[in-house]
Length: 535
Image (cartoon, rainbow, N blue to C red; front, side, top):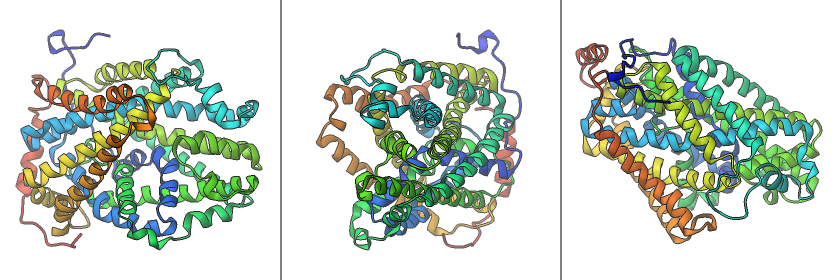
């Protein structure tokens, strides 16, 4: 498909910037972005491995000292500068545009593999009814790796396609692009208004089913029993900060983009607290449901919970199918669990793709439909070429590990340093938050973002660098990690610099009368910082 250009008569971006029609829809969409696969398959195990019930202490500290403050940073930038990540950062300071494109490219990488996991979950909804994995002599593990993914024995980049993955992936992308084409209110808002209630209802039913299984109490004891000695381990605190950071979708460009769609008179901090605590509540609910089910699994196997506890792909596609085979009403539990993964994944994928679409829409001056198609279709094609293959799992595993640590983590560290010490913009952004919030922020917020944030992010990044450089990730060949791990992470930075150097189209949002009026209104409201609650 050819790319429209202004010389070819591309649609001009003359319409007003889209906005969420209500604060409720913004909150619902922001929660939809934050509540993703990691809430369901990562948080329970992270908590269990890092002190059980005692982990809730560093978890709460991480929310208050890093998660929410950085979430407010995203909100303040997006709402004040009214643009996608590249445009908002550029309006803050011309040199900061590159950070926005770095986030756009990070979202591109995540989007192309995230769709594959959603497709797996969709197929496992059906497999839960038929219990298809029972036909494999090696059980759920053998079925997932051999019968379903048909994983190659060689770690490589291949194009041996697997039809039962390609087809559901195609429909995942079709649904996502159709929602995106409809726009912020008719597409994103409506999708979240449907998917999020369904997700919550399905997961509540799953939790109720799980806690009444034999052995469930053993799983819950394993999850909640506190190991206070773990609190003296710095790695436990790093795990809490790391999880919260990724869980709330900060520094992805997502919340900058979503907050740019909020109305001028919106409650920023009130919305942020609602999103943060709704996200955490869902994680705790997930922990209860998952460990109750794992307790049942351990009970049936006659083993301890720690022998069956796992996370990520192993939890979802190996442990849970085993539970489905053994539990009363197992098929219902499977459909609810994998259906929850589908809905959680879709709401997150929509938000990730929106970062990319909004960026090109702003820079090139395209309207919603052509921007979505010109961006969404190539992203979908790349995704469909790389991941529904016999080597797709290796590629997904490597790219996920490196884009999270050396994409998102590194970009976030640079972001807080640039807007804190570099540009000294935290006082201005704090004033903006206080003018548009029910809960006022004091000096504490600036200290947390400008001091605690860089310290925590820097510590995590150094740890990850040491870990990844000590040995080849997952034992994969050095060349494979070099290209699709380190090489990919480096290419994101180079690509961001290149995209920031491309001139903005004459039809772009860089010179936008609507924003000029918004900026005039903001500047007219500039007042000395309101004394409020210390954060």
